[in-house]
Image 1 (cartoon, rainbow, N blue to C red):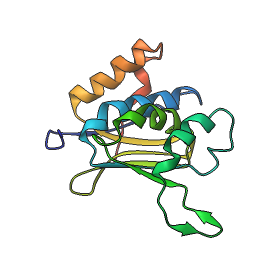
Image 2 (cartoon, one colour):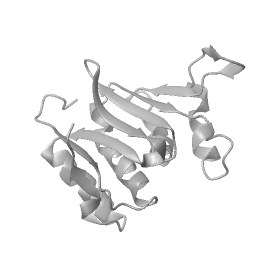
Image 3 (spheres, helix red, strand yellow):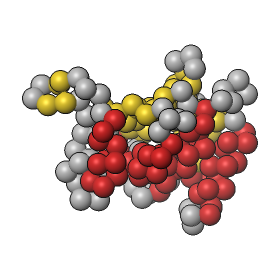
Image 4 (cartoon, rainbow, N blue to C red):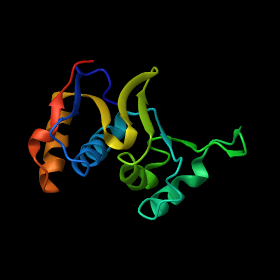
Length: 151
């Protein structure tokens, strides 16, 4: 875990399209994964949508076992190191969920992506920011999609 390094706040450019914002969130999650103590994601509505059903189903077994209203909670908690096999599914959903967040020890929020990727904030080191930009560039996205943000 690299949490002690100097970090800065980053977000998604206001110029990002609805397809680009999720790509930034996915790249940031990939880069931050090893620094996270845990990662939470809300699956509400994602099991029913054709384009997210497979990824959401891969995470379904990790749902919390609390009863909420008429069914089980749709919140999932993943632990990097223990749940690395489902990281691709989580990456596919961070731009589609109503809420996801990643915490470093001790209870420090360093990843926050909400409202289908329209509200994103990440705490990255300079090297991690460069890795996010490189990941975006490799997938054909503009390097200007990741921007410094006020926190």
